[in-house]
Image (cartoon, rainbow, N blue to C red; front, side, top):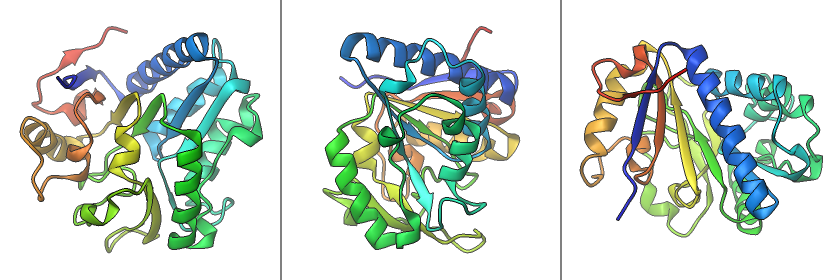
Length: 245
């Protein structure tokens, strides 16, 4: 029997980042005590950035020397590009904690979508499933770089694939983890803030109560058992559990 989703509604984006940081520390500490290591898939976006800054400012009780870092997606740009998810994560977190650089596996977007996806697929197979995957959601319901209209059937058996953002996005060519790669994570934590996400989130909640059809939003296709951390604005009229602060 699948684990049900959990929706925690918090007052504001800052509270979402605080609660997410608390959960990451707890999950990392538990994994390191049980197995000696912790594998984390990072997400891009402003809400995860706030989380990363909190982890950097209060790094304990995590043993950063025993953490493996993966990326959920990347734009096909170099690591110093202003739109690089890796650059953001490095500035907000990775350069500020005593992490082993050999355990940080970035998507080499500068190689182009096909070559970068192929190389990262091999890394994902070597590292194994993550303990925790962080996700965000766009106003269109995309997550990682899996956008509405993505051909999920072509992803079968793959862990990383080339992806394309629709018109209106500054960088179209992307690399994304597949649903298979995300779904094999022990826990998935989705961080969603802002009133502009409310309509998509209401649809996601409806879709996650029934089998995902071909028209389901990408984040609706992530396996059941996702823990959603929402601010009040994103939650809109959605019912949920109010987390304590």
